[in-house]
Length: 427
Ligand SMILES: *Cc1c(COP(=O)(O)O)cnc(C)c1O
Image (cartoon, rainbow, N blue to C red):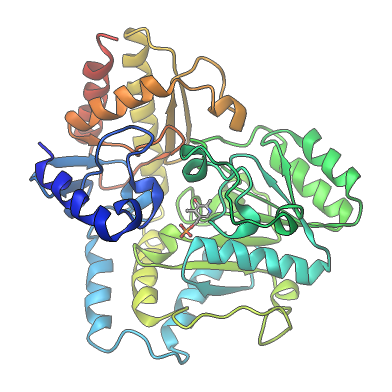
């Protein structure tokens, strides 16, 4: 069934470490060989063996309107004919920046980079430069890319591989990253009190998606906002996953809370490598060439990537109902899954917020990293491989979120629910 994928993986492993260019693509957490995808259209992936799969990874988020979405594809084709990068300013950079500033509350300016990692790394440097303080607070299980300061209890990828703290991160770097517990304001307050006037910023996924989907509890984001305001600390919302997904303005809009710096990635690139960070003028003034906090990129804002991102943001902006449709589809899927898992007497918790959903094989409420880690991974493995056999592709780790795309039809959702039913019927 996956003969050609397995052969391709054997060949890939000779030349690429572990055969993959990003570790979560390997099937280490679930066993077996990863599947090589040949092409994709709408909600479906087509692999090298000719299998058709309903896709709940969607490139880990960007494909919110489905694969090979025509406005994005056409924009990229047209742009490519005129040259893909010049290393000079181009008009399209201003177009996408203007549109992003219109869509996202509370930001005056935005800087484009090439990945979410770069965006978060730069946002923290900017926060340190602005506040003239060194330490940062992050939350166990939140992922902000693979730069050194963040590889302390970094969620999905890192956790899946059983090494929460990566070798190669120096103690000097690690000591400036303080670790708090998600949804636990007390843990944040304690760190602030123990490190008076040393903390530059608090960075978090305002709806977590890298330890499964974990929404903020009532008052959590408000409490962080107020702690930041009282202690001269900048609040950074890492909206790499949630930005342009949970609403046009991300979690800031949905929860009506403003962060000081916001980071983006995934959807903002329409499937090309793009990240971005944004803030109000007073903060962005500190960034080179306006200010002295340095940040740069040869391919940053290249017209090819910008054409994809612009087409994506325009499509979302011109279809204000899209976020409501996505929510409704995800709620339908959630309700369907709840029904069959209950019927089959499975211990589970499903978390869902907007078009993000995760299934945890545990009875306990999943509100932070420790409770996410209680899930039964043997059940998850069986579920993953069972779903795959039924033609449904979910992320190969219990710590990953399902991303719902608008290309999914209700028939696709019904098929997914039926697959979950038959997979868990005889456990
Ligand atoms: C994916 C992700 C990142 C890292 O983005 P890359 O483009 O993979 O570097 C950072 N933060 C969050 C919340 C993410 O989901």
